[in-house]
Image (tube, rainbow over all chains, first blue to last red; front, side):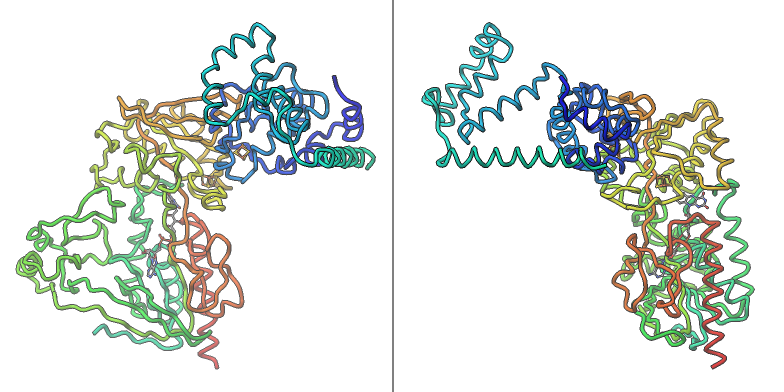
Length: 211
Length: 426
Ligand SMILES: Cc1cc2nc3c(=O)[nH]c(=O)nc-3n(C[C@H](O)[C@H](O)[C@H](O)COP(=O)(O)OP(=O)(O)OC[C@H]3O[C@@H](n4cnc5c(N)ncnc54)[C@H](O)[C@@H]3O)c2cc1C
Ligand code: SF4
Ligand code: SF4
């Protein structure tokens, strides 16, 4: 489901998607520097699984393929290995642009459905923001059960040994199930997050109001 | 002692490649006193290491011979080989250039009969062939070397082999007592025609030049074609001596790249287009070339040449900067991996041999130059009034082909002549 912000952005940029990306996507201003050499696409270890490798995504941005880019699963496939960044002859921070595009597509409500990276990202965020500390037990179980109960039991059984070892090494505590640890000033932490969200909303709003 | 007359009306040219020879000759033919300094034992520079020249596909020796004739005819031109500039000081119209001369151990009685070399046995890496083969310690640097005099490698001095070489010479041309000399030469203007060196392919890690025998550079490819080269002019690949009938060229290897040379080396597209002709020359329709490129830069009047290569059914073009090269263990074939920009198709292509179209960087580090001159970000000398009486000629100023380098050298000669004319008038 696309968001109101999305409508506003479509209105504002009227078919100039490169400008929209330049203004709003993290490191998006680099996209115009791409010379289409293709070394990033060839260097990506996950490349064969992408719909559109980075080089192609950058060309699609220039070609105004807004829908296709923002609903693509491609940028969600980036594992931050930085191979492309190390090799790009133009010095584009490709990894960061990928994450920037993923985030922007989510904000516009255009993210692909049932995309595991996106689902995990959201789960991680919700888990973290609750107490200010990651609850690994809940996060792990949440992840295992994301595709339903039966699938979850199966995955959990498979990972049993890993969980036990983590407990032995004190990397995870079963007590976390009862609430779990958190930051000292929890209400301060939540206030901080709220403020950050307001600032972010204002920033996008500002962009939208400008001509 | 080497005896050279130099005054503040002398023009010194550093570097005896095609640009330095041209600048020196153009200046001396206006009647000026010129000294040409070359650090190698022969003139001609990197052009002498090419097999053929684009665009006309003639052998480099033809241009070279004309220049040699002009040099012999000009009394006002002094040529010193094995001469390297150690220091330079002073100002416009009044420079002092310190030169280190390393001995050849052979004087100009040498007729190039080659008897001395027959007496020698020890071999060293052959720098003329980019170390792909060996040469003896007593040697003629290349078949067309000018001057046509043998050289004795300094590493042989003091050995019985050097004495045997001396004894073998019927003309008394070998002088093993020659010593390193330093000369301080006066000059009104100095032209730097020190040229280029190939970018170090070892630095382009994903292409495996350091790991795979069948990944070579474009300058090495030129040497494989030369009948006097390491393979006797056969296109054989290094790993197993198999004929290289299916050759890949990787463009912009180390050029136009923030991680390497930021500039376009400008000649390597043309060099690869030319080298596809070599593959054809050797194997006819059995010879296949594939050029992997970002965009082809066959600048202005070279477009005809490019179109002819495009029309050749044995040459394919793949628009893609190759991401990495691996090796097929069984065959020794390099495997090229990447994504084709036209259609975004992934490929893994095997070839017999990969030629990296490495670019040119300045051979001299002008940034640490003893007198102040303008040097650009790429390390080439910029034309600037503040350089005074110091000028660049040819590739010392920018990546250029021979035609442009020679034009540029003529302009540099004219500028230097103006400086010494002013000195003379004052
Ligand atoms: C693979 C390849 C193929 C090419 N093919 C062609 C072609 O087909 N046609 C074409 O037009 N161009 C071609 N080029 C370009 C051509 O090689 C250059 O244009 C040419 O070499 C420029 O000549 P130069 O005299 O400026 O420099 P160089 O040839 O580099 O000569 C410089 C000279 O200065 C000397 N020197 C350096 N430092 C010192 C010092 N400190 N003291 C004294 N002497 C010094 C060097 O020993 C050398 O002899 C090719 C280039 C490459 C890489
Ligand atoms: S490596 Fe850099 S310049 Fe080349 S296609 Fe990718 S982003 Fe563009
Ligand atoms: S001349 Fe061609 S191969 Fe060489 S750097 Fe320029 S574009 Fe690349």
